[in-house]
Image 1 (cartoon, rainbow, N blue to C red):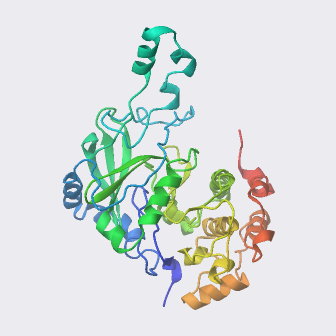
Image 2: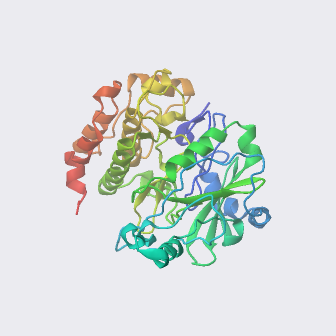
Image 3: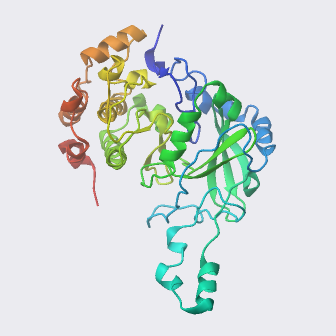
Length: 404
């Protein structure tokens, strides 16, 4: 089967929709090519974005508020939305503040909560004041949002631009259809995605502000990344390649996010340009945690991710750990610099063979420093791959990244 630039095969479960504005969704369970079906650039075309847009918005608007339905809601601790760090980058109007209704999710910013010392007031008046000061828990429903244009489409649902009515805060609303989720048996993966992503707070990781559901759909409230996917941006570059300085900045940003994830024992397992978004200032953000796992102790054996980015241990079905993200980082660095994946081949079998032999060629116009970094990440022995902390101080990174 011809693979050329479309050689993005997805294995056994959820992956991303390459949406025009970059909010991924789940993909199917079959092997598919990059650029085909819901996962590729076809979904990014103007025609793809406009087709059936009115129908899609209508379907979402038909949804009601929160109901239990046939889907068991994830039993998660109430996530806390903390104020974003100050930055010179443009920020949409202000932080989301949901309306007060009932209580599946506490979204009260920590800084807005009354201080414990202030609540220890003497007498009845003090107790009453403390009770009044305690914020009520919040709940989201579809009626809280104005639904805008579709941003992407996937096998299990769609993604829409949306705005919270009260604050006018713009978000991306990822809508998953329960029937499709149940039919594919990925309920646990959806719960895991919500549990992991809703607790992450890093400038290079897409925020999940909350979630809710009704009788037929699950809604994920996500940060809006107006720059779209890194894949879409790469396709617009001359030769589909970024200059080395820009590559180094992207790699450094990704390293920072992966260090944060790995410190929390989270493995992403599906790093690729389609799952990396660009924010308001062009900053890189990891998205789509559908394949992520929380792995505090043991290793994993599930074959998952995208074929071009699979590590040798995953190809062989051997146990794998956080080091699979290091391999994917090396593949990504190569692709951003060279315009194609390092193990690109005309058949699945040939791609597998090249991965197992770590057989790739770096073009002569790529600098030796960049080639060295790639060679220290694309290492067959997982234990011998360069640690993320060393990648961050590699000479190629030091040369191009101004770390303030």
